[in-house]
Length: 120
View 1 (cartoon, helix red, strand yellow):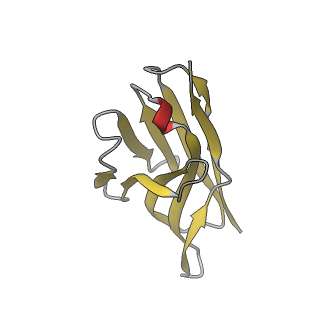
View 2 (tube, one colour):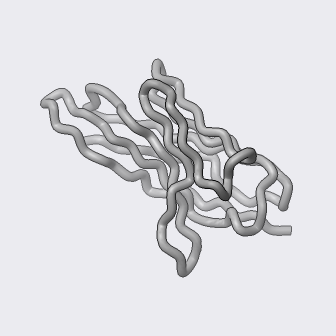
């Protein structure tokens, strides 16, 4: 069983910063692509940023220059540093990971989500 656990969400004023963390756990052989997605009320889930095991990055245009995705492969932990937050960044943020189990199965997993609220 594989789980992704997010932490670090909360409420912050516009212009503020937050750092999200995502830790995969369970029966893991390797962790491939990791990513952050978000879903605002009444909207579809959207990509925020992804990072491959080799460190290749991809960002949504709406967060470029403000958010930074990173990962610590030794700890299998992924981070999202969010700066210059705007009210429109308010959403539930989900961690997603493509993970290979020791049996050779590769599957995408989702975390339970963490709420980020940007409001004055």
